[in-house]
Length: 477
Image (cartoon, rainbow, N blue to C red):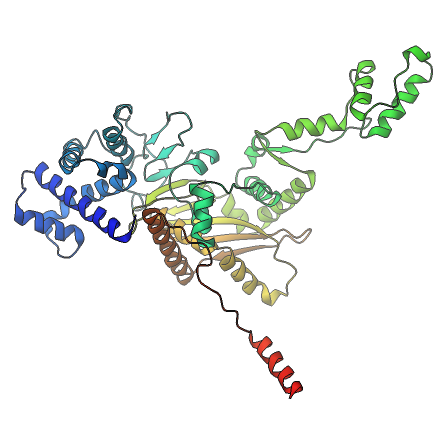
């Protein structure tokens, strides 16, 4: 979609929304059309039309996420809008409106079913959240359709459901900062898959050990301990066979010249309780239900966990009685209408006016001099866009402050640093994530996902290289 086409799309959408609102309220006059249009465009304000801002925004968001609706005739679109406006109880959420609009462009879709009323929430202060009920979740999704969550706060979403659900997360947004092309390949066409790495697995282990230690056994599979007497290699198998054959007639002896698998099968035939290292490792590797970790990873994680628990401040934070762990937040970006989501590691409700967020970070920060630690951590935060995530957390989860708990993972040197995100750092992250959302939205509308390099590069010299050039030029002279 070109910029001109996008502009026409927005104008037509606004015109239909204005007509529907005025017709639904029996005030459809030329004068009101101009007034409401100008009010929604923010070129003029009219107090009498402030009451329609919310419904106009909701219709706009749902239309943007259901672009095929604009294939219909304007009269059909306006009638659909009017139906939604006059039935607010039936269309309480974006997902309800979206299903209804989809049914108009795809009549074979199932009819909209009014969702059940949500349950009450248990945390979130009134000053930070709209209303006092848990947002709705469509729990019975069609096969292969990811779960969908309305804007709000959720305390019981599984890790898998969160990562497969709607909305742009801070991790996805940081992929957009690599390049819009990378974002498209990773999250739209999905030709670039997320690779599991030991670093990611260890990070998950460390978070769970510190924040939810009761879940370690359910979520992680520790490499098996090889018992004494187990067959660990071909030599150990052959040693057993030689001992077994020693007092057996030739006809009953086991072969020594077969492949390892055949030798193992022979041993199992005469020693059913035999334990083979290969079998234990294979069974461990075949378990895809849990994250596999090695003994070394577990020991390192436990040592770092203890460092956090022993720290006079961090230990109290991660065990605070008013803490909440891995709470998921869904929202809509005001500038673009894009759905967004965040999931801070830890939040603490200190009182009704103060909720603070925390992220736990394991990092190899090296053995720098003590005076250089602050600069090293600052570089880690900026280079890894931690400040961008923090700004998203504060905006979407409506946190009042944000801190990181850094733990050094160098062996036997697990110091802990509590780091606050300053207002200036959060503002930088906010401006950066907002810009990236605008870039992503523009690419979604135009279908153009620029590569990281779009112009011919000119490589200049650094100051050091310039001095070196001047020295060589002097020598040549």
